[in-house]
Image (cartoon, rainbow, N blue to C red; front, side, top):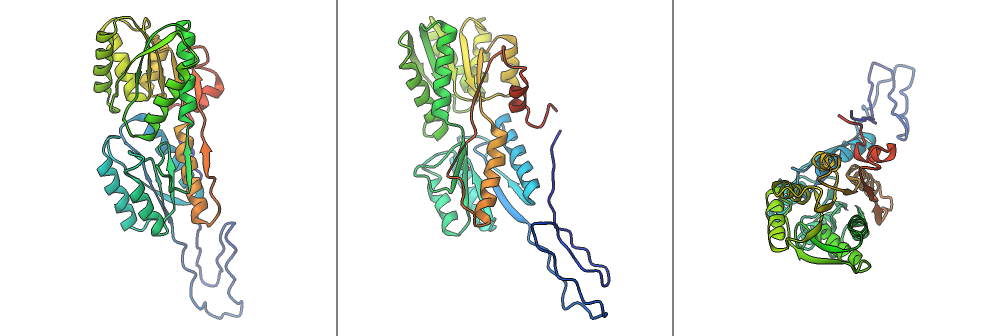
Length: 338
């Protein structure tokens, strides 16, 4: 179920009846009652166009971001122009998409950068053209955006290390499956997990291999880890496709539940694996809020208001024990189960 609350300005013209608008826009002055004609009808207000460019469009995570952005757009009366590359590795394609948005003179750009450095120039072009830029999920280096709306990925990945240590009794060999080297979120989660392991001396990180945000590649690198390290006791997958690949590789070797898995995100496939025991814990972000708050920060910038420099959308560790808690369900299904 979608929550849709539209704020629209409706212009009514009927003979000598004046026009009025919903707050906060002040009412248009009423015409004189002596029959004098209008000197010109008020022009309808321009609809704001806010472009939202995710890193990818295939995975459920980004579809939830889209729902959040569209909900915010409905609330502020803005048209959301959603377009992004199919895969998170398509840096050049993302640059082209954003530059097309700039050519079409959108009012603001909300973006999740496929590459923290490669997208800086494009973001700066937008700023130079007086088009506000807000980043969500994956930021820029250096950060030239007005606001960054995201998870604290370092802290979230450290929580994953803590959870894996708990599951393994603080001992054993573990593997790490980040997704794309150079993508800010991947790098931050890799750092956070490794930092988290420093306080768990009994856990030994024996392999780090990248999934490239692809389920098939995630499966392949997990197979490689299992072959090279037959005593592997646990895995941390840093995003949805990597997690799904890990789960499939463990199923193929009949190791589901034996090798413990902690993963980021909360796709339907991951939740199903959690319920079935193939995955033991999820570090759940709030992609709906990323999309929603990203658009809200963009609207602030358009209105000339000061943006919040950093908006932390938070993480929640979800296990089978708390999966059905009402607060957890609200995070997993912000618009209700469809």
